[in-house]
Structures are given as C-alpha cells and as structure tokens.
Image 1 (cartoon, rainbow, N blue to C red):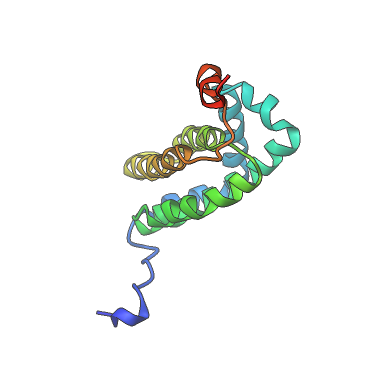
Image 2: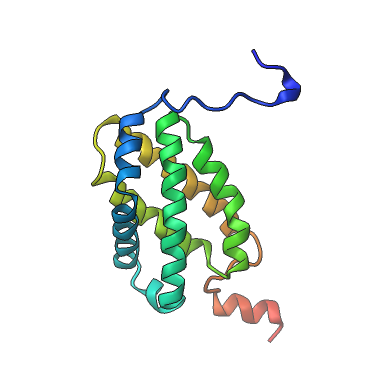
Length: 160
C-alpha cells in the first residue's frame, strides 16, 4: 500500500483491455474522423454553429479524447476519461463551444469506437464515454454555457 501523502498509485495499463486500446490507438486518426462525421450526422446544426475551423478544433479534441479513452480501456477504469472531461470543460467554455456540441462529439466517438472494437471492451468503452457525457451534462446546467435559450424565459428574466 502506498503512503497516503504520496497520492494514489498509477493505473495499471494492462489491467483492462490493452489489446482493444492498442486497436483504437493504432487507428486513432480514422476513428476521430468517423467520430466527427457521426457527430455532424447526429446533429446537422453543428457544422453551421461551429464552422469549419470549429470542426477542426473538435477533431483535435476528439484525438485527445481518444487517447484518454485508450488509457481508460487499457486500465479498465473510467477515471482517465472522466477526469479529462472534467478538466477540459473550462477550455471548451473559453472557446465558446456548448456542452451540447461536445456531447454530440462524444456520441459520435461512441459510434466510431463501437465499429473499431468488439465484445466486452466495446461495452466498457461505451460506459466510459457515458460517464464523460454525464460530466458534460452536469457542466451544461452551469451558467455561461453557449446554447440556445428559451425566448420566453429570456424575456421574463429581462423583465420585458
């Protein structure tokens, strides 16, 4: 057992599904591309809202999310992806990307990863992405999220 002041032990990267993590990381560019395409098919307004430059930024984000997903799948723990999602929300807010758009990205990656790996590893990757989506939905409710507001409620709060 490690000393409590030294923090927790690093995750064992071979405790989960290292073969599946290797499959994802070997084709991460292709999986990220398919994830963005699936996200745009899932929500066609995404392309109009963020534009081509925003889609490139989301593609770059998808690559990092896939790296963290590979860590999670390899270690058999959802913690790496969940912690990354928790810390990356500040960056997405600063870039004025709504949490709904990032949720669409995670949904697209869910489809792309499911077509890359199979079996228990695919189910675990799906649950890890679900945990990430739960974090995004929690952050969505906080003030400052760039999403469409209800016009009636906006008028009431304005006092008009």
